[in-house]
Each structure stands twice: as structure tokens, then as C-alpha cells.
Image (cartoon, rainbow over all chains, first blue to last red; front, side, top):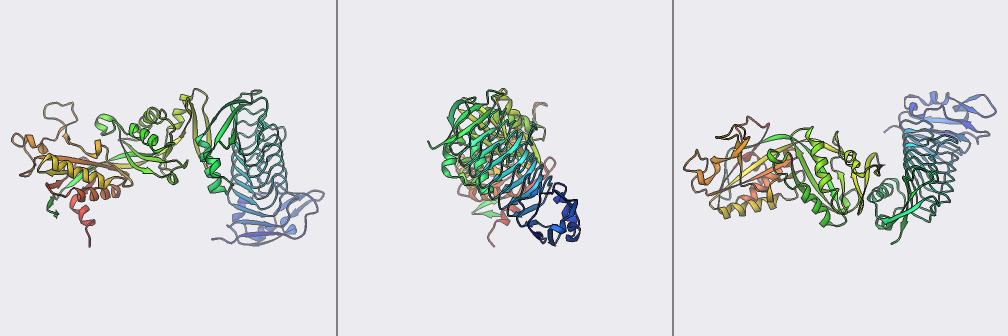
Length: 274
Length: 301
């Protein structure tokens, strides 16, 4: 097993750092000294070497581990294609944006747009996520196209906005507008789902395991036990460690179809204890 | 070789390469999973007349199924890769889709060859279907009057073996049946193998071709028909008045050999004269199961 490549923040970041060009998946071929020479852009300054911000040590080909408060590090892990990245602490906006594979685990909170336009792989946030987790950039018609965003805390507004495929699972509460303008895909909320979930969605599923109020543009269809929900929840419980209970697996779900302001082919499945 | 006084002939069972899929059918209760499995595997004894061969491999506990319900594992075989999609789609579509509470999943997730099943059945939903990808696998949700039918998009397909067999040569029909039942019971639930014929037993073993018709690909195995002993070149030893055959299909040779060993051992009982096997002198099938070798491997040291 290869040794971790460890990047420890030398001092708190004084300004936002744009990490979008780092291509972490390519680091498997780089020695720590080569990684330290990679440039990043810091707001208000010219490009700085990664080694000026981080103490870089360890081996190559193994897991990449960031340590320190990275709340001002933006787009860290963007475009990741493969590999395993661990971020110990908080991280800034757009972590794991446009990921295509691999796995990023954040032990703390993540800022705006975590997993924005995610296409593959798994982004796991141990704390809470800011607005638009697993969503689309503002004004864009399409967000996530695959992969999974797992939030162990709560998520801000518009989680999964405009997603086309993939899965956003939130162990806590979801803010206003979860799954807004979804094209397809699935948003699972274990806690309370905020106002206007699934508004303007064409297709897709919002699986609400806590309190939820469907928008007026959704219509009740029936109560039933969809088998795919059991499959999905078993996956989330067994492989993602989310708090799935036997009641979730065995319970009934009230199906609301909508949004009838759009195609009406989407759904909100609201778990009931019956 | 003798086992408890039953002669094991020095011969082999000749078997053929087939293609297999494994279906995991679940239901709200064991009753409904089994109901679908029985229908799906009905009229699937031989490719000669049924286009496919299928059987129940074993019942599955909730912990063994994707959705945590009780289930049944079904093995399904055809002669060629091209046959598989059509046969699976018609069988799953007519017998599982129609059966209350059931869902249907792939039981060969590691097989590299994938056959579209849910991807075709979804059209039954007339545009109301929806798909979900869970852990990299796509499933189709088909609305039905009861609720929703869930079927995996693609099923794995493997090279497999059909036609493993042994013949029970008995002093009487009753003895043959009792030995065959004991053999079937001993082979029940063995992973990777199934018995495609009714109750696991064949009374009408066949030979290739026909004496009278050029169009028939199989006809009665007159050499093993006791009633024809006096009018044909019989292969029956003295004292044999009834013969039953057990046909075993499996996903690989060890699965068939394991089942044959258990079945033959159980069939060696009072009233049985000999155990032999059907073959075509090695000219047709590439898989040869030598009875004495199989039984010697299972003998206690």
C-alpha cells in the first residue's frame, strides 16, 4: 500500500485560493517536491507555489490528504478523475466540482456548490454543505450528471438543483428548494426538507424521510412501497453509513407527482410510519 | 466400481456448452417469489422443444437479496448468446412482470457479457417508466396496476454447461422412481446447478435423430427402453425393468460434478442394478463427466 501524500497548511489562508487547476488525479505520478512546485492562484496576489502554502510530504500513488482549515480553498478536487482524497477540516466553495471519478471525503463543512456539476465518483462531506450541493452553476440548465454527493450534516438551499443524473443524500435537513428544476436523478433527505422542494422539476425523485410539504404544483398519487427505495436505502445504509432504519425500509411512501408547472414526471416520495 | 452393491458403469456423461443467466426474483412473501419462479421455469425442460432450459437453483434468505425480501435464484440457459435476450425478455415479461409484488435482479453481477432485459421491458410502461442508477447499476421502474415492477436493466451471461446426466437402471419402476427421488432430494439447493426436467427426472431419454424421420432431431432412446429389449439393440443389463434419467445443467463443470456425485450416491439403493450415463461417444459435446472419476473423488479417504 502506497504512503499518503500529506499537505499540511503552513498558516491560515489570508485570501481565497483557486485550486481548480490542480488536477489531483495526476498527482499519482508526482513526487512531493513536484507537487510543491505546482502553482495556485490566490486572490490579490500572483500565482503562488503550493509549497508556499502547504508543507508537502509523503509518497506518491497513495491517498492525498489535506490538513488545516481550508475554508478559503476553492474548487479543491475539481475535475477529479480517480484516486482517494481526504480533506481534514472545512473546505471552501465548489469542492469536487465536475468530478468524474474517485472519492473525496471532507471531515468538516463544505462551502457553496460542493459537487457542482459532479459527473462521477463520490463526494462525502462529514459536516454540513452550503447552498447548491450537487447543483448547477447559477444560470446553468444542467447540474450533476452522475456520481454521489453524501452530506452527513445538513445542506443549504437548492441541493441537487438542475441535476440530470446521480444521487444527493443528506443525513440532516435540506434547505429551501432542494431538487429545484431537476431533470432526473435523486435527492434523499433524512431530516426535514425545506420549502418548495422539486419546484420546476421535470423528472427525478425527492425522497423525503422527514417532514416535507410538497409544492402546490404537485399532486398526490398514492401510498405504496416502491422496491427501488429499499434498494437505494440499503445502499446508503450499508455502503455510505447513513442512518437508514428498518422503518424506512418497511414503511409506505406517499407519492406526489409534479411539478405540473413543467412535465409533471417528477416525484416526491414522502415516508410515512404506516 | 460398486456403491452399496450398485454397479457404476465405466462411462461418461456428455454435455454441451450453453449460455446461462441467473435471475434473482424477490417477492413480498416466499409464496409470490416462488410463484413467479415456477412460472418462469415452466416449459423449460429442453432446448429441443422449449428454446431454453431453466430451473430453480435455490431459495434465498432476505439477507441474500438486493431488496431484503425473500427470493428465489433461477438459472436460465440457452444454446447461444443471441438467444438469451429474446428468451429472457419474453419469460421475465410474461411471468415476473405479471406476478404480484415481485422484482427481478441480475444474479451474475460479475459476468462481463450483459444482456438487456429491463431496457426492453420498460416499453411496457408506455412512456411512464423511470430509471434509477444505484451503485452503478440501472434499474427500471415500470408502473403496474398493483404499484410498481422493478427490474434490473441488464443481466449477466456466462458460458455454462447443459446435459450432465446419469441413468438409474432399476429392477422395477417403483425402485427407479424411489432412487430418482432420493437423488433429486440430495441435489436440491446445490449452488450453480439445476435439474430442468419435471421433478428433476426424465423418463423419456432421447437419442440423436430418428430411425424413420429425417426431420426429427431426437427420438426415444430405444437402447434403454425395457419394453424394446427384444426388438432393438438393447444396452440394458439382465434384470433391469425400468430406467430414469437425471439431467443436470450447471454454471460450470465442478457444479455439475458436485451434483452428480451427490445424486448418484443417493440413487445407489435397494432395487437399483446399475448407474450409467448418456453420451454420443464423445462426438457431440466437449464436456465429459466420467462417473467413476466423479464418484472416486467423493469417496472417503
